[in-house]
Amino acid sequence: MISFFNEDVEFSVPTPRKIKAWLKQVIITESYTLNQLNYIFCSDEYLLHVNRQYLDHDFYTDIITFDNAEEERCVEGDIFISIERVKENATELGVAFEEELKRVLVHGVLHLVGYDDLEDEQEIEMRNKEDFYLIRF
Figure 1 (cartoon, rainbow, N blue to C red):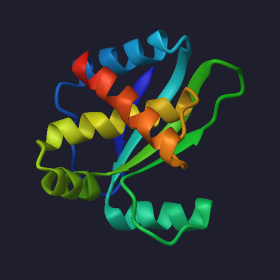
Figure 2: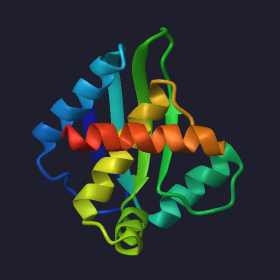
Figure 3: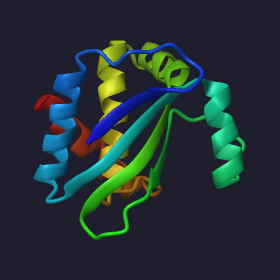
């Protein structure tokens, strides 16, 4: 099950049924099963607090993913997304907000199915996977 929540922002995911179906298909394509996936939409300040409290990082970010899965090849997690940061990134990149939102949504799923983006090569692979699934939306 995929659920959407708001913390300190008013936000509704556009076409939520279509987004959920797409994200489920990403999980299946990556040979994982879906247990529970929670997206929590929030402000920059809220996500900065999460970043400081749980990751000991003192900077703004667009997404933080927590993997709560206890079984292998099972997706269960919480994904926090700063709507402010997604809007700013979309503006800076010259893309529509909805497009950047979908990229961030799938980015979190890709982390939960084993992709990382800490090193340059990993980041390239992550971007390629994001593009692959964005085209299939």
